[in-house]
Structures are given as structure tokens and as C-alpha cells.
Image (cartoon, rainbow over all chains, first blue to last red; front, side):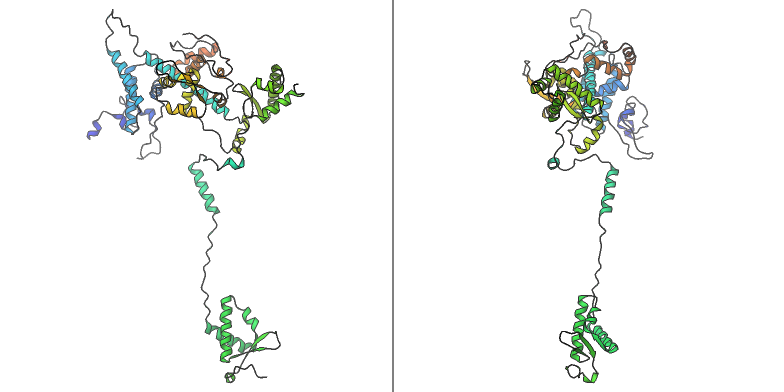
Length: 286
Length: 223
């Protein structure tokens, strides 16, 4: 047994299976373990109380206590246990809750004391009376708040003129309550809308001048006469055209190929030249 | 000279306004006797209801207001893009209720009933113009007194303050909620409401006639 197990504060043990001890009965409805079986962290839902009176009313209702005959010892114990519970979850306990704790303990003490001797002036009534009155009154206003809430809900369904903002002042859409699934949907939509990134893999088209030289020479040799335009039209890219042209110039220079033009502004053609004639740059002999 | 078609003229006035228009103001604007205006209002209202129109005539905050019918709220709401005012928190509703029933009331009186500090909540209500300062109390320290506004009636769709449940009705509602008082509820259901409920020494004070048209139930409350 570890020393911690001996501490008489079962409320701080949040395990739902806590033995129903004195204060152990408290977490019964205050704590709702959620989640699946197994050893996940215990989820605790603490009801949020508007104040000490609200909490007292909750305890009274939960334990089915007659508000006009409150077992003060019991309710004090339950109340303190609840404060202890709040503390154990590091919730800040507002000062008002502590004041009420003191009030409860004072009433409890008064009720334990023997009644004042007969003949004494002070005729004290039930020490609980003031608290009961406060509780009854508060409960009525809680009820009134509830009816106001209903009226609010009804009224919100009715729209008068002038509520509609103009397009200009409408501004951005307000934040709507969204679930995790809404978010996932949104993500999916965005993902599907994103244009597929088209990657063009650019291959450096390297045209080899020597290759072109032999290609042109071969073409001209095979076909005898090749139109200059045809030669360039076979090229795929601008770069290829340039390389082809350079190769052509080289061939003309070396005398492998001769360039002929039959008429002014006519087609330019390439013709093969005999190797032995390669020493002249002159056009083909007539 | 009242308009030839009083009902149509009335409809035109109501349509033009985003505020509840009082009977007096309508009568004055139309140069028509109030009973005729009231009659025309009834006819107009019945007309909307019978043909299930998209709008309805409501009596709110001491006046008449043309509003969209509740059944179309969802569609209008969409058009508004959720641009409706924030709902009041539970704390604000509680404080609002206390002020409505106890006005004029001081902050410390509100806090005494709620058992918690209510400054922030009161600030919110003042900011939203649901509550206003009515003056100062004569008690020591001359604390400010708070009361409800026309906006309060409008916000909760109340004709006037008398439309709030009366204290005994509240007690009946409370009784209906409390398990240990179920028998009492049954008795009440048999006899009907209006019975004095409970034997509490405490009475919620009757509503003051400060706001609305003063149509307050003046039924004497036992103590």
C-alpha cells in the first residue's frame, strides 16, 4: 500500500470504480468517464455552476433533498467534496464558493449547539432559514431565466427589416461551428481542386554538329538534290535548325555540298559535289 | 383625412419600419381613430395568418412589427449569413431575469440573489442596451439602479413586462421541475393554474410598471 492510498480523499481518485465511500459517491454524476475500455486517461465532465447557490441546488436536486428541510451535515459534506473535486482538477474555486462553504459550516455548527436557554431574549429561528430563502429565491430566478431563454429562442426566428447587410458591408462569412469532419471534408475539397502539378521534364536537346554534318551529307548523297526548305522543315526545334544551318555552312565551306538557286527568289537546293571538286567554293559547274 | 384603404396604408407603414410602431404613432400618422387602426391591424394580422404569408404581424415592445414568419427562419438566416446577435449566456439570462422582476434594482441586490459577482455580466447587458440605469437608490452609497429597456422587450419578443410569467407561475414551473414536489404539480394540473403555490415565506416582488404599457397584473400576492 502506498502512502497515497491512505489519504482519506477519495474524490481525488477519479477512477469511476472508486469504492462508494463517504465522498466517493460524489463523482457518480459529476464525472462521466468517456471513451472506450482500456487504460485511456479518464475524461471528466464537471458541470459548470454559475455560483455556490447553483451548486447547492444541483446537490439538493441530485440527492432529492427537500429544500425546506435540508440535512445540513450531508449537504455541507457534499458541497465541500465538490470543491475538493474542483481543486483536484486545478480549477480555480471562486471566492464565492468558499464564502458559501463557511456559511454552511456556520449553520452546521449552530445546529449542533444546544438551543439557547429558555428565557433568553434572542429567539433564533432555524439557522437554515436564510439559506433556504436564498435558495428558493434563486431557484425562481433560474426558472425565470429559463423562460427568457425560450423567448429568446422564439424571437430569434423572427426577422425584421433592415437586418440584411448590403453586399458591401456583409464582409467575410462569420465563423461557423465546424466539426472535425467538416474540416476533413474541406481538406479533401481543397486537395481535389489543387491542379495537378504538371512537371515538364526538359531534356537538353543536344544536337551534335558532326552528326548533322554526316546526316546532311548522307541525305544529299542519297537524294541527289535536297531543297533547303525541306531540310529545315525536318527539324523539330529552333536549335536543331540552327545546328543544321551551321552544319550546312560547314559542308558548303568544305565543298561537300553545293548550294544552288535556279532562279531569283526561287527555291534553294543542296546538291552533292564530287569530293575532287571540293577545293573550289564555286557553285556547281554548268 | 384617413387613407381610403386604411389596411393597405397600415401595411405600407409597417413594411417601411424596422422598429415596432405603437398604435398611437400609427393612428397619428394615418390620421385615423385608434380603434379603426386597431381593427385594421387585426384584419391585417389575420390576413397574413390565413394565407400563410411569409411575414407576420407581431406585437413586440409595445408596438407592431412586421417580421418574417418563424417557419422561414432557416432561409432568412442563410441570407443573413449568421449575422445575428450573440445569444445571452446563462449568467446573463439569470441577471436579466432578476433585473426584469426586481427593477429598479442595484447591482448588489442582483449579486445577493445570484451569489456571485455580476459586474461583467451587467456590463454586457448595459452594452447591449438590454439594461439601462434608472437612477440612484437613496440607500447609503447611493448605488445605481438598473432596469430593463425597450430593447429588452424587443430582444425577447415581449409585448410588455406583463408577458413574463408571474411569480406564482414561476413557482409552478419550479414545482413542476422538482421531483419532490410532483404531487403538488398533479394537484395543480387538476385544479388549474392560479393557485397559490408553495408556502414559501419569500415572494418575488411584483413587476413594477416602469416599462411597457404598464399592463401589470395587480393580483395581490400573499405573503
